[in-house]
Structure formats: structure tokens, C-alpha cells
Image (cartoon, rainbow, N blue to C red; front, side, top):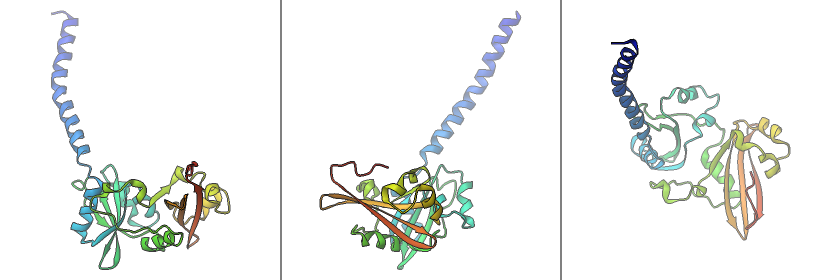
Length: 223
């Protein structure tokens, strides 16, 4: 047997050995990805496991933001799950804050601490002072409502341009520096032919809000 044929047979043998391993790893990765739960599942976990009477708010991108500098917030960085849901629930009239990993089989959901001086209920009240008429009650079927029906959280790059859009009294850098937690809550709705957009934030320990109104038909949200 010449050297070329020997090398070829060795390569074929190695390929036969490695093929099942690659198939197993691919299958395992696919299964792991497929285990990620959806918003509806996270709402059910909050109610079932933590006995929440209702869910006031849920987001899949805020756990890192609202826990900045608050001790066990680092826990979420060590998760093996792809992401986590941050849930504000209500139990016996009190707010409960819960982190639910996207793969609850890998990690258990746990309660955490709210990262602001004001409750989510107080944040909703500030929106409603601007006429939002927002009701904080996420249904079991989260997807029965369109995403713009929920208060959103904006942070990082999505804060760029917000200072001038809402006229917060300073440029982006100044506004960012004033924020205790580097994020803002935002909500928009239509009222009397206008799109009203409001942001609520905590600046220097105080709850603040800014409003922008634009006629319907004009590009109201340019950020």
C-alpha cells in the first residue's frame, strides 16, 4: 500500500469516528436552543412558581440594566441560558421582582431587587399623568397584544438622540450622566390626531418624565 492511499484511509477512518460526535453536538445544541421559553411561559412561571396574582410588566432585555450595581445582579452574567426575562409581578398588593432564565432547566428562576427608588406602579402613574391611560396587567397570552401596547425599556445605543428628541435640557452625554440607571421607560399612544410619546427616568434620585407630540401621518418616532 503506497503512502497516499494509507493517508486517505486514515482520513476516512478519522471522519467515521468524528461524524457521530459532530451529529451529537449539533443535535444537543439544537435541543438546547429549542428549550428557550417564550413570554407566555415566563408569565405562567411567575404566577405558578412565585404565586403572583398578576404580572405588571415583562421584558427580556432589562435584567442586566435594572440590576446595575445592586450586588447579586452579577448572577445574570453567569447564566448559561441565552437571556433572561425580567418580570414585575404583584402578590398580595406588593410588587415582586423576578428573573426567569430563558432555559429554566439550566437555571432556576429567582427573586431579585428593583434597581430604582420608585416602583413600577409609580412609573406607570407618571405615564398616566401625561394621559397614557396605561393599565399594568400583562395577560397570560402575552402575544394577544401588539408589542407597542407595552411600556418598553431603552438603554445603550437606543438612547442616542433621545435628549434632543424629547428636549430634556441638555445633550445626550449630559442626559446620560444624569440618569441613575442608564435606561429609560418609553410609551407611545395616539390621542386627538397626535402621537404622544413619553419617557420616564430616574435622574439624581428623582422621577422625571418628558413628552413629545407629533401629528399622525408625520414620522413621529425618528429615533
